[in-house]
Amino acid sequence: MENPMETAVETIQREMTAFARRARASAGRMHPELSLVSYTLLGHLEERGGCRATDLAAHYALDKSTVSRQVAALERAGLIERRQDPEDHRVQVLDLTDAGRRILAQVTGSRRAAVQERLADWPEEDLRRFAGYLERYNARAAGC
Image 1 (cartoon, rainbow, N blue to C red):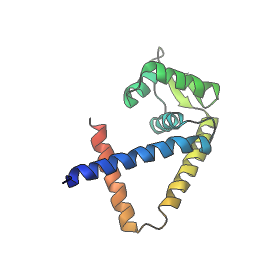
Image 2 (cartoon, one colour):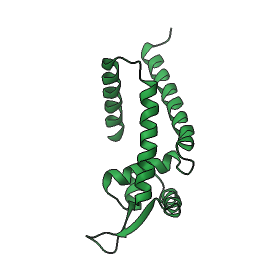
Image 3 (cartoon, rainbow, N blue to C red):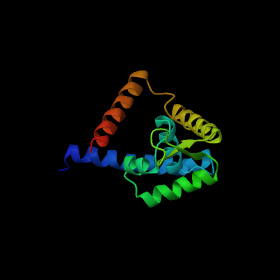
Image 4 (cartoon, rainbow, N blue to C red):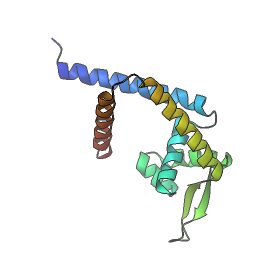
């Protein structure tokens, strides 16, 4: 006899994996030059008003070389730029360019529309509960 808790956890894990695969696959369709990782980094830079590459690596638990490659690609694409930190001139801060802001807004709008389409027939109470569960799960994951 299978444990209902284990069954639920297996289902959640399987569905989260499917969600992540779809998110990675759809990133290229949203904007061919913007991978899911690039989109995530741009979003973080916008949210924070810029930050150091080492801060990105620490926040996402990524190797510095991985972030360095992503940052270089985003710079080459003209989506981010380096600027001197006003508080410490020895430090360079990464920030979005105007083109980066436009592309991020475009992709965010496309993603939001796709999610809204998938959830269009959900009752409002289900949407609120689902949003709350995701927030709770991610808050717990952030604390790890």
